[in-house]
Structure formats: structure tokens, C-alpha cells
Image 1 (cartoon, rainbow, N blue to C red):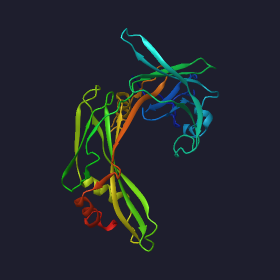
Image 2: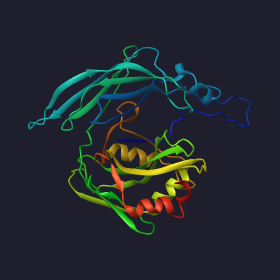
Image 3: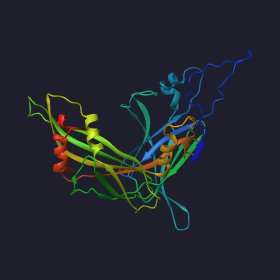
Image 4: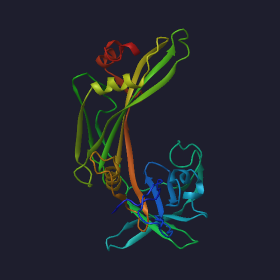
Length: 336
């Protein structure tokens, strides 16, 4: 892991008042810097790696960012994903190697960089949670090479709720989620998805299933990376009802019927947790933050995450008290 002071890869225009007649050139000689972002999930069979190059030039960097050639490499890179483990003699044993191909995604959201199409490198392979993974990227034109290694966040058990539980949210009362920490997992997030049926009151035969998500927490950390520790977090039921009120619009012509709840846990590796912590917006007057990277000879992040969920054949049914609060309560009663 490395921390760099921010380098201006995407410089905004700057007006400089200088007391002499000489011009100030803020652009240094060009140097190839690879920018790599990829998260491996052991439950996925297709894995995407974003590889671009840093750029700098005169004028408005936001305009450069909208041009694919500014950040894309002119030729295809050699990208290899190695699966390996360390044996009892501390030797590295390569299990398999996969060469990544390119694909074009067509649904990237609008933002600073060009969209909706973007070039992505893809690996189609099943991962082994007991092994490590190394990505090596070579620009065969310039000879620049970067690499990074990651463990995979392992599976973990969810103790409460379970598939036999009912979802019970009560305003002013705590609900507790319990789970066992994952090996190589550091940061835990819980989303609760509430599903409901909706139809036009004048046409009850045409029902639509809809859902909204409630981010319960995203900042719970494990004590270590060994896994197997009991963890829990308690939260008030008020957030459940307030989240639904904020995300489900009132419409007098619609009838809605509460249906079920799902718990979705997501776990980030140590590297991903550090990256999130370093890149979170500053809440102090010091706005300049270092750049976090675990890419050797480049910048970016190559790490791991995993997920797990709780739901039975019908997902988690709502308790009678929760159902009544949704339909008749002061917070969401007007929506159902």
C-alpha cells in the first residue's frame, strides 16, 4: 500500500498572476502512469478491470476527460491474472493464469469521464477463496509494467436474522443483526431491501413488484482479518419507516401492499476499506488528501469484496406489528 500526495492528473484551468513577464508552465514532461481499478468477488464468474492512463495538458481537463483517447491506451495491453498460493516452503505455486480480453460496456452513467461506452478488461474464470491473485499489466509498446496482489474475502455466516425469522421493525426499538466475520474481510455494510406490490386502484389486476433499499450501516469494522469472530450491530426501526417515506412517493391513485424484506451484507477487504477511508470527503478545512494505491508502479486499487444475503423461499415475511405500522402508522400509512 502506498499513499501519494495528490498529483494533478485532471487539472482544472488556473489563472496565475505572476510578477514577471515569463510564462509559468505547469505541465511537466509526459510520463506514462497506469491507473488500475478492479474488485474481485469470489462469487462472480466474470471480473472487470478498468485500466486507463493519467493525462495532463493545457486547457480544461474536464474537456479532456470527455475524450476517450485522453485516458485510453492506443493499443491493447497485455493483462494477465495469476492464481497462486504459498506452499510450506514459502515458494509461490502458480495454479492458473488467465489472459484478459477487452469488452465495451454501453451503460456507464454520465459523469466527468466519457460515457455511456467505456473500454474494460474482462476475465472469465471461477475464483478460489483459498488462493491469492495477482494482476500483471504490460504495455508492449512502451514496456511499462504494473502489478498488484490481493487475497479474496471469504464466505461468512449470518446468524440473525435467519430464513425462519420475520422482519420486525418497531419505532423507538432496536433490531440486531448478527454475523460471523469473514476471513480477509475488514469493512461491513448492510442494506435492507423492502419489497411491495403496487397497482392502480382502478385496475387491480395489473400489479407491479417494486422495492426500495435502506442503507443501515457501512462502517462496521472487524477486529482482525482471521475470520470467525462474532459480530453484531443494533439499529432503530425508525430508519426503516423513514427510508420508505423518503423513497416511495405519495400517489392517491395507487394502492400498495407491503410484501417482504431482504438483508444484503457486503464485506470489503483491508485494502478496499483503507481506500474508502482515505478517499472519503474531508470534514476539516484541510481538503488536500493523499492518493491511496496498492498498484506497484502505477496508481489505483486491485482488491476484493464479497456479499451474502438472508431470505427464505418467500424472503423474510413482515411481522404483524411491522405490517400494521407500514399500513396504519403515522410515517408510512398514507403510502399504503
